[in-house]
Length: 200
Image (tube, rainbow, N blue to C red; front, top):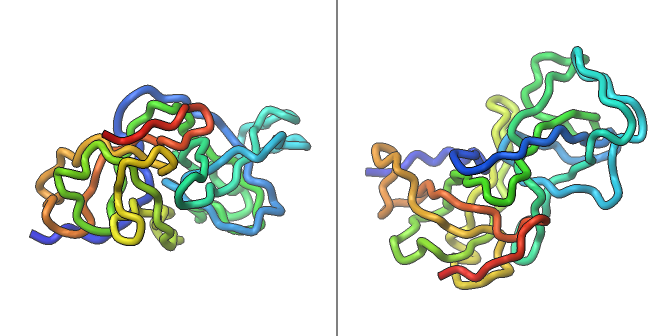
């Protein structure tokens, strides 16, 4: 059975949660999608009052975030869970480049996420570390295109890798572990609030 090739980025499925409202600065020239990993901007927060829909956020109450760099050794602060409606364009379900946005980020270092791998993930890869692979987010679904890299930088015992593979997803109706695009459960290993761990 072939697995569906439909990347969605990182999607929290279980574990503790710490959801934090954050701001994407209007000068940030990269689009962001639900499921994208992000990192807090050093010393950054909203320098002015931000009004989004019916919510008003006072100065300094929204940490600023940008998309996290992908690959070995790059830190992640959390994952975009949702994007607040843009009052200037209510049809948008993602954050366009160079547009201020308010996003909700899952920042708990022990949260567990699902992610699609770029290839099959054999049983022997469970417990290993892995990195993220770039993909194109969808302006239709609003979902990230990022995957777990199982092809160019394969899972290994490497604490500098961004993820730790916990297990293969339980949804076996759409998840053949012998086929490409296996969906697995992971934690963020290179988290700004976590000491990185070697895979087992």
